[in-house]
Image (tube, rainbow, N blue to C red; front, side, top):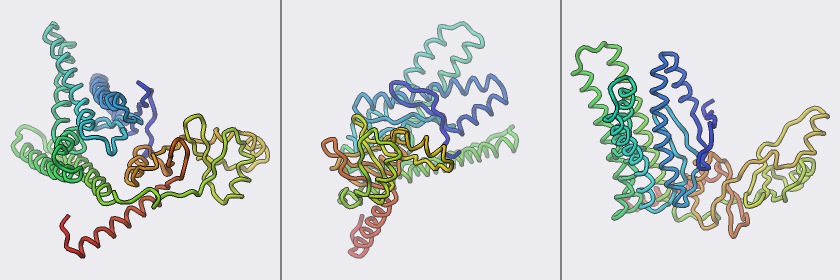
Amino acid sequence: MANFSPMIGKIAGIDVQLHWTFILLLLFSLAISLPLFMIFVLLFLFVFLHELAHSITAKNNNIPVQKIILYPLGGGSVIDMDDIEPRLEFRISLAGPLSNFFFGFVLGAISILMPGGFAKSIIQLLFLLNILLAASNIIPWFPLDGGRILRSYLQKKRSFFASTEITVKASNIITILFIIGTFIFVYLSNGYSLLYKETIVVFDLFIAIFFYGGAQAEMQSAYVRNYTSDLQLSAVSSKNYIMLKPGVKMGSLYNEMLAHHTHLVIFKQGSEFRLVSRLPTVISNKGVGNMIKKDIAYFSSPLPVIPYNAKPFQALTKMQIYEAGIIGIVKNGKLTGIIQRQHLESVLSLHISKFSKLHKGSNVKQ
């Protein structure tokens, strides 16, 4: 249930998913009132357009985009932005807020020309929501767009690690100010019930924890990238897999697995590598008979790949983006090895630990 995010469609070749918590929010708003439900739908239409602006900008710059997911607190574009140029990160990050400023301007112009009434009130509300979305997303607060905008700007004169460190510190200061501001607002507010004030405090603390966690995740990612950049893929790669031609039947597959003592089976279909990831478990004789006649492609899924000259931290980032436990290494279109996530994380952790001890012992300041 935690990872349940049904796909609702595909736009410009990008999968669009709704997170299960977002679905609950829509159902909850519908149970309260139809107008509230419609406002949420319209709001998240512009959240989606915001994320679409990020994704299309990335695709136009030849950066892979896996999907867009809508959450209760906003949306997320799953973009392979690891190790891209700062100017591209700046452009992609800025595209979202700019789209909301644009829609806000259009809606504001429409509301001025419209006669008074309910429709004008809705347009004015959407105008305000777009301006708020744009303004809030340019605050230098990880994991908002503003955090990435500030980091990419700082990289003009600083390293990625130093720029991330400064941006995370700025994010933490904003988080503290946000919490202080919440308590000041609640203290000075008159005419509101105790329940209302408690709800505001709990909701804002939840937001603060979410943003603090996002900032720490960015710092951890930068730390891994900085202190494992000397590692090569050869330190984490493996050849413990079978490479088969497409069209093999499941009946032949099990003999191959027994002969090579591995359960990892890969084949190439067109330009795409695929992993046999759904090995069936069958008990009845009838089921076995049907299963062994099936093509292995039926039980496969795409295998994410990285070039042979990439770094291990880039492999980990790509695994996180694609929610994959295995990633392939390619050179000139051929598979030269694989990396398993559990092994990769262990090697990275040991390397960072060793690095920290060496520099701690030599009193070198990081």
